[in-house]
Image (tube, rainbow, N blue to C red):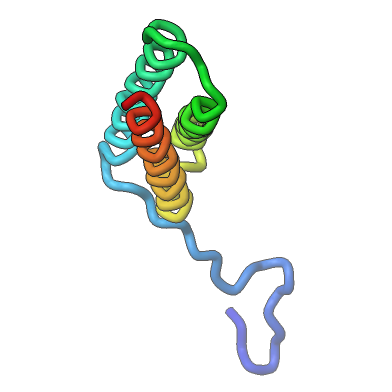
Length: 118
């Protein structure tokens, strides 16, 4: 017991806040959403980049780079979502932001690919 006369032990932290845990199923839902979008990205990139008729032009590099970057960001987001640290609420929120950013980059890439192909 500590009294005003006895100092606290410096080795014992005053208060170590424990990070809030996520409710059951949040990580699984995010991982599912990431893998669905990643499957779409890889399929679209394969079709648009390899199987679609026509020739590549200088303008094709921009959508291709955006599609590749979006796919890479999704893979990194999946890596973040599978880490044990993602059980903490603050880490989960960062992973969700990464996922939204990757989806926006993918949207820009798909839009540019459609615009370039039209």
